[in-house]
Image (cartoon, rainbow, N blue to C red; front, side, top):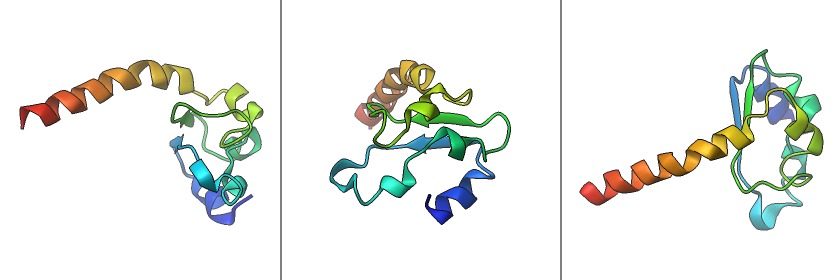
Length: 91
């Protein structure tokens, strides 16, 4: 497990990931797991950026973790993206 990630998560209220793209192998040590999320403070919210791949940037255990809010996060993401686009079009 990457040392910097392990240290950072111990004070994180929210953990957000993005897909590793072509660097999946190089970033494997940064995969978010349930064990890693257990190091976070109580109430941590884990929101992998969709589309996420189980077993690639997030483990299956992380998706099952009580802090996982990924599906709820995704439900609201489209509205946020539309608001940002509308604001950009007004300028």
